[in-house]
Image (cartoon, rainbow, N blue to C red; front, side, top):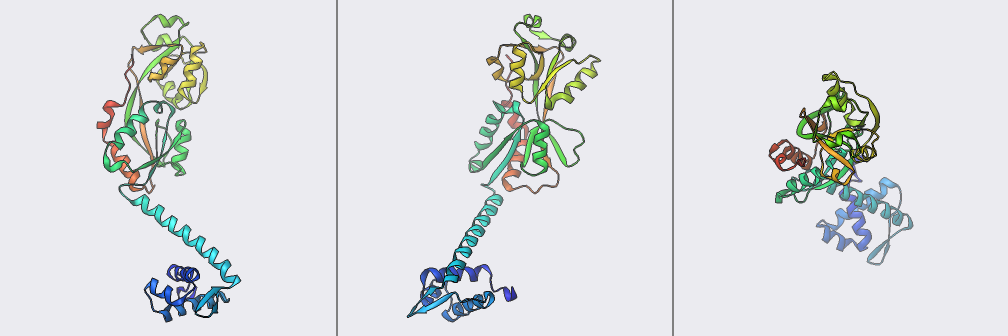
Length: 303
């Protein structure tokens, strides 16, 4: 486009002239001289090779081609305006959105409490969130393709694109069916658990394997599931036993919660793409998460 004839200001002038149908009124509203407006429209017509307006007395009207062009230009300007607003919202330090992924065990209690603390600051109340829930491998893929700004998940090895920042530790407990012989106990050892088939969550498989390997204990696997509520349901019908982070929803399953004699915790990490360009809102959320004062009230205590 020679000489930037079709820049946004010129197209906005064309649209306003099409709406007011009068050169003088349009020039006054735009704060420019009428000859300048006339030259602008003439240049657009020359660029396109068409006539956009016909004169009718003191007024003008769009030609048939002018009407088609006006509709297209108006839609384009609206999209540009919307895009500009979206970008400004993203860089606004007091608004914008945060795309957050999290593992299933954080959903019932920790995520609601975390957001309540984050939004308790009046400067953060205008931030909006979009959520993705899943196991750690799936969430990491969302971070890598930038569907999510962050994921709260387990550490995964061999992920060079991802930075993992330790955020909190979830106490682990064992659960068994109330019909299981171990249900008569209050605490249980890994050695006792190794005598039973284990149900594993997909994103904790590596951790559990290492846990039992370190104790030189066999790990008999009954099955693997995606999330811990499904896991608890299978334990309740004695498909196997399980080790998982404690949450208060376990009381709604027909299982016995046992403390581990060898105290264990699951590490939860903030995962982010190393070269991602984060919005102001996302950076504010990262600062909040890495300030560990918020953790004291997050974790439910096993009863």
